[in-house]
Length: 109
Image (cartoon, rainbow, N blue to C red; front, top):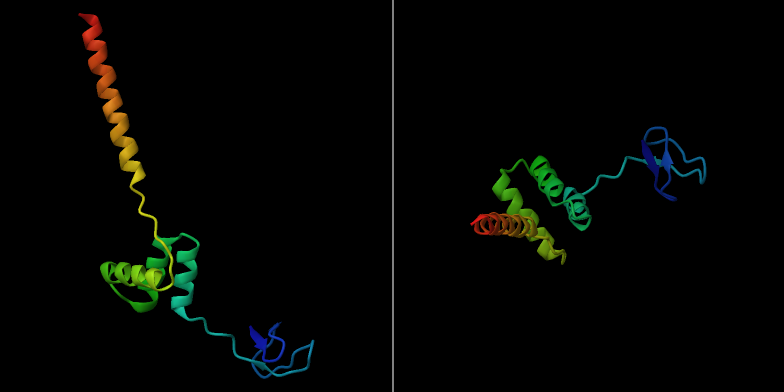
């Protein structure tokens, strides 16, 4: 797939073909900057996918990719959510369960 240099529309042919809308010559498909896609994923809240994309495009280990993606997020003013609420909920349920168990033991006496 190529695109028109003038109007930017997709051309179903090869580079060098002409655009049906404006008769301009088509050029090669646009190359996307891999970091732009990572930043887009971060803006969508898809941090894990962003780290995977970074690793795939840069051929880095997980730790390096994680730190690099977090750095990109800071550079672009994107706040990454730290999902710690799940642990709090689990601990609260455990405490409530233990409290109910102890109360049931005390009421039996």
